[in-house]
Image 1 (spheres, rainbow, N blue to C red):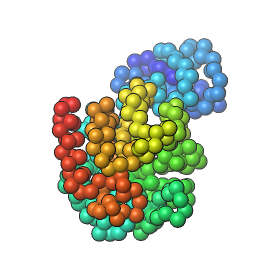
Image 2: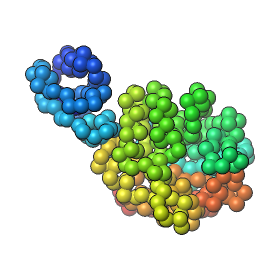
Image 3: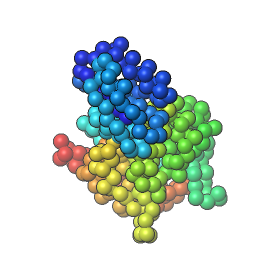
Length: 335
């Protein structure tokens, strides 16, 4: 349920409505708007009778929300959310943000050289993995805290915030020491305990779509984070698993404009994981910008053929420079 207040409603009237909602055993989320305040009711499983609420002073009307996600939906927040990371802004009306870096942090030389190149080419955020959820247990699993230290140092040296994946609750404190943005990977999209804990932290979250997740499941996962108190969520389309085997996954470009219809949260695309082929990264990254993505995340490595993980989908330095030239062209066209 969404309780919409009158334009002239006072803070006292808003507080009274919040108190009534909480007395009913539900959570009340105050949502300030440009013209009026709304109050989201969270925690109800069934229809909530609205007659008593409509009689309260300052209440304009009530909207019953039937979706499995509420705070994430445009019913609760018709205004677009812009996620701020330092001086950087991600969301509708902002220039698309480019996140680039190696799949895995392998060495100081590797991550520093990559950070320098992607920064010079125009990237805004440095990405890199220190904890890697690999399909096979014998594959490279990441450098752990040493990798985090290298990633953080490379980001600071190039004045770039860093994003890295956290895989479990026990890693949160450690990762938060080094990362500016917490990434929840595709395999953990429905790790609900982890989502709840991330929701308690005042840190932007990059939530990747699960490889077999529907759009409603994707948005419901984001709801866990918002309900816990963290509204700084960036969604990421990284391809879904279909019958097709020619590419690593199938990049669902339609999800970008569709989620922008359903939700106020920003959404970016990851063509590296979506395609699994470096030759496809440029056209699909461009397509993501064309359909309205708020940013792009790509994997870059000094020597992709020697990468310890995902080298086949990583761009080399000349390839990334070429990508940035093309993205810049299309971003300017959209303006």
